[in-house]
Image 1 (cartoon, rainbow, N blue to C red):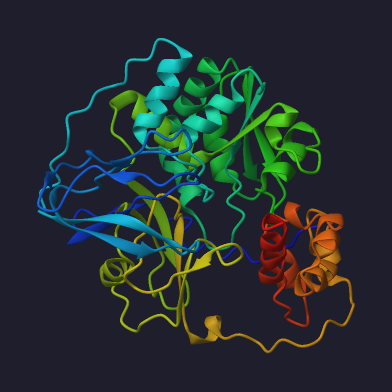
Image 2 (tube, rainbow, N blue to C red; image 1 turned 180 degrees about the vertical axis):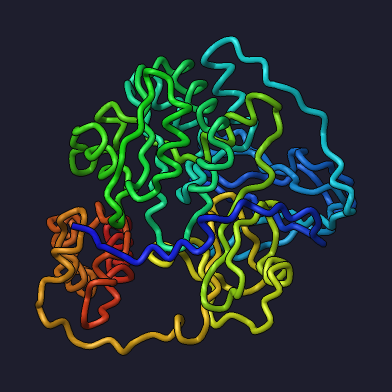
Length: 420
């Protein structure tokens, strides 16, 4: 199950370069799974980096903080790569990066810890964007092992690998905080076996109750259910979550941020991304202010020819950017700038019943049957085929010699199911 892909981690050996200046940032009020935040500032307000500019009382949400200092230029509606629109706060940078004063959060109980995590604005930095405080709350009393997802199995993406190599101490601190306050007895850091340097570095930082778990260099070995089975032997039943098997899974960059935040109190205003692809002459890892536009990113990277297509994330599960004005939010771990050859789409032909999608699917689903049921809008068949359990990893579409758009079809099927 799964695929053996070319890793193409051209930026794996490069430390992240911090972008010190930008002209403006656009901060969407929805950068997480859940309820959008509401703007807490208005046009003309001067804000400091780290100041809350969006929040809500809804439990499934995370506040949004200014990533630069400057004046609020306007409130706008922006289109999200995930679909739909949301409000956004546009801040014109003053170039000074003046920050709010911060210090280590005062934490003396589990509730204090969860409150601090919420105040930090942390969401899952692996791409899903689930509010971290909500995930940790649901894990309290249920999880007895923490799995640190450092698989970085998407081709090109190297930001998580650099987090291990450059900020391993912060990752270890984040693990300690989570395990202490949630009373978790064991932590396993999952790293693909060919990342020898990262395995050695993190192994030297592990305490007796922590260990390194090596993973095969196959995609999508970083999927939560596969990770849980590989590292603990536990099977997550169909339709259930890893927490139902006593496993809490967190992304390595999320834990690295948490380690830094508990020491200094700076909220989530920047993140490391990988920039690569055929249109990027110099692959790089960059520490960018959240809300930076693709236009400014391309200018900073000295992209001379406009990319034929831009993918936010990796090539397997990433999303196509609507345009160059798209802001990079908390969930974006990489940007692929594709040239015309990489962006070219091959013609789709009829399914030849070869079974390649069956053998590739890590969830043992039947993608070609789900595609047929989705086209017929047959909810009963989709339910029987477990279409709702597809994690949209893209293995089926990649393996299909007929170039069937199977993931898109499965998404249609999921919509049929959700609409009754």
